[in-house]
Image 1 (cartoon, one colour):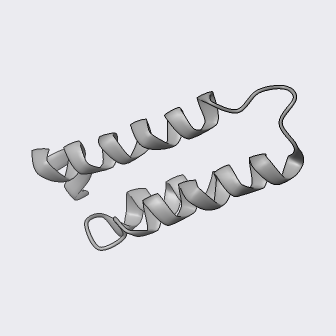
Image 2 (image 1 turned 180 degrees about the horizontal axis):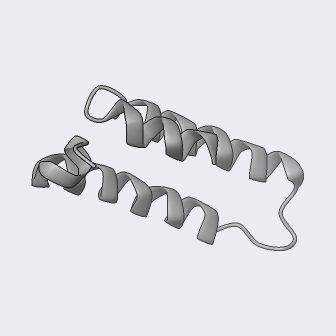
Length: 66
């Protein structure tokens, strides 16, 4: 794969940090949280990842579609 995620260490670091932020958001949700809380977490995740679209659209689109 020749995407910047695999060839540019700075892009990899940016995307990995964004994924870490997303993981923290979801880790802070509990089994008693509402569906709305989970929906808001998903929206936050999409906003975080969309900001990185110009760095590696291929990887970001794959993450957004999962």
